[in-house]
Amino acid sequence: MSLSINSLGNSSSWLNTNNSKTNSSSNLDAIYSNLGDRSMIKNGSYGKLMKAYYGKSSSSSRSDMSEEDIEKSANAYSKVKSNADDLKSAASALDNSKLYEKGSYTVTGSDGSKSTAEYDYDSIYDKLSDFVDKYNSTLSSAGSDEASKTNKTALNMVSATVSSSNLLKSIGVTSDSDGKLSIDRDKLNKANISTIKTLFNTTGSYGSTVENKATVISRTADSELNKLSKISPSVVRNTSSSISKTSSNNKTTSVSEKQAYSSLKSAAESVQSAIKGLENNKLYSKGSYQVTDSEGNKKDSEYDYDSLYEKMSDFVKGYNSMVSTGISEQTSAANDTTLSAMKLTSSFSGALKRIGIGIDEDGKLSIDKDKFNSASIDSIKSMFADYNSYGEKVASKAASIEKLASNKISDSTLYDQDATLNNTINNLSYTDLI
Image (tube, rainbow, N blue to C red):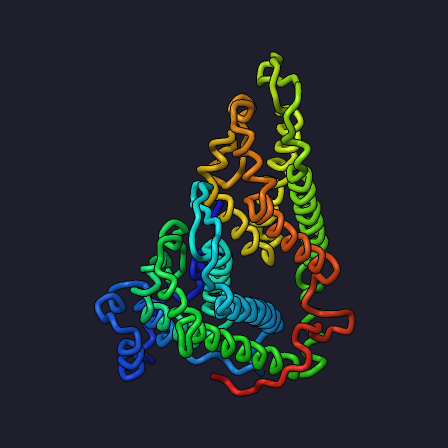
């Protein structure tokens, strides 16, 4: 299965360079000077991104746009705006002095191990992980061909990241060949708190720069959506009519998407319900119990592993259903959040393995009953019943997915019955392109 939303785009994205001679050497030199490392820029992916941007021929005027193109643009810029707004919030959350206050905290390693520290690295990790996810989503959507007006600012956002790459690397944040960020939890836990503050909690910081770029991206998307909505009521109405006439499968697809989001909502609810069951402290009480192994044999135990296994199996089943549905093309709006849940699970792979839960190459979970029966009850409890546990965090992801799915079920189309753009593009005021 190809998860294209993890890449900068598909065959029609920034990586699709062409032979147009509209490149301006002065423009390129200006951006090269901003980015700093000329050799990396010229030979690597950033060079490709810039060549793709400056190599694009001028776009057609809106009067020449087909109805299909209008719909594509509206969908693309709606996604850009949503992602950019999320990125602004994520950057703002890191710009909070209370996050970096001294105290006595428990810190979680990538394998689930616990240690103590003077700073709340777990909270910092959660917020930084959210920032990384939102940054990557914004880069993907704002760098697409369908959202060409936001390409330049997205490129400038990459520029800011490259300029701060050494500091980011020192706290465990690195970028891949497509410019996407990732975070090393163990390296972050060892990072100097002053460096993290310098990056996200000072005037003119990297975080504030990214937040400003995200603001520009969001406003540019607003502007483009506003222009599309003002083409004329008849054009928008004809767009809706044309789609229904020229694509006999369009209505079926809409129904199918609703069904997919319905399944996703149900799976996310199942995950939350299963975790709620696993959070019950009575489940971990000592007593006299019979435990069943994978072959049906029974033996005595101090803990009720059979009940624990039943609830854990419910969690695994619900999680796998949520993952399968959440990364499908029919639930594209939930792809990023689902992948975030999968990344969270991957970061706890070592701790999960110790209690008999494995992760396959598709991110699906499985449970080994015999290994689970042999696991330390404290290990299971710390993963699912303790404060700030893996269970609590994945339940939060599932709640976000459930809410998103519910919204899509109730409003699955960009246009309402009067063929006007829906509330996501109402009251737009920003009209200048940046």
